[in-house]
Image 1: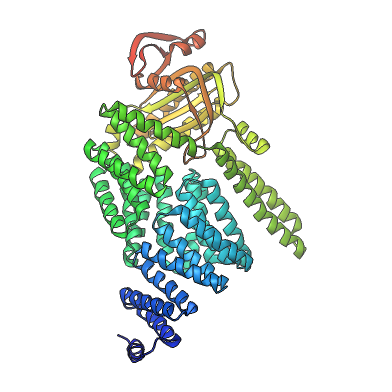
Image 2: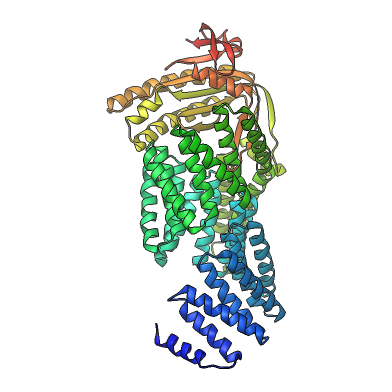
Length: 630
């Protein structure tokens, strides 16, 4: 015990009458005790609050309630902390002390946030922001915009989240607050990551990391390393992802923060699982669940149950998977985590269907589709694109205005503004086809479209599971990337729209977004070019001592619907029976072969030699006529 604490304790013990001086001494003692014992500090603050109430010393009671709330929050007793913060808000309001009222509201919001009471937290932040804006406390308001943006991101409201983070970032830029700007940039990077914009996310995170490393702020460095690792994971660079998360884990262990340590274990588990190291992934997921439970972090716990459920299903431990998904659904619904709830419903429905529990699977799938529709809001995607472009343009305009005021390099500033506009346009083109991005910029929205005549191509690697067991994760990713880069050039050459890649599978469509009568012919020509490239890459890789990949190709022609879809990803996608049939063509193809359906054959039979294979049974489709293109 420090001499100062001993002296204050003796003075308090010798005070026979409850008065303001006693309350002030108790508050000072509680503040000193925080460094040594949070429990003692809380007990002293509670006594100060009670004694202040008996003599109607509102200023003292308000300060004591605020101090007690701080102690309880650090002890992770958020229920108790909320009670004290609410009392502090009430008293500071009565005393007409708006700065302190705003601080108490912010703390109350933080306690709600940590306890996953997101709606209550947002309400507190909004009230605190209103006060700070009236006081012209711009940096304080920006801090709360950031907190609110984090909550909206948790709930999947990405447009609102991005709007708040960019609003905070603008204030920090104007006030030249580099440290807070780094925090805001990190949050913007998280939104880019959620939207699958990996290049922008990595750029933002690395910029923020440089600031944090200069500050020697280990807590923020570890957070950014986790985010950078997640980007590498999303880009399928699992080796780099695991290395980066290990760096974050070591820093988090030094800090001693259970939630951060749990997050690192979760991230490493994801990458180990992606590389097929399932038992190592399971160990990491269990470590994360234990720590999230210990820390009473419900959001982390929901994700842990989802991860464990998927991994248990992969390990054919269906009973364990059902239990994990059930716990995830209960917690996600309780805390308002809509994205995680949708995932839990979808995964559980899939598992019940596999077990033959079709009634339960149907109900879960129905609930999932309702929630997905709520989350899958095209208007949200439009607003996000507009806000990103608008923020970047405003930033450049401010820079140009400063140059104009200084009367230096005025022409260069305007050129930079034009270049920034082009970069923003290019960003949209990386996400959407040209026609769709132009529609978005012109009308502010896009609508799904039906196409009566298209050709869909699926291609994947035959025997990929066996091949992947013989290669490192880095060799797998670099190999697939070599092939898919070549496929991208072929599709660009033939005017075919690449949709996406799924693991070792490649999906593209001819005849969208601009209808094309030659859609089938162009697709078959592209497929034949793919065969040539496959042969060249086989020879090249084998001469370098690497295995060549043998792809199966399947094509089907028919109607489909295309548009901007997705819960988390701002992406152009397709759906319909034609997509499923094309997948069946690929599954029933052979290595180095192009397998086409009857409808495609009728469109290309006069131009290409085809061999009829007969009617072949396809999963969930029955017997289908199939042809090999010579």
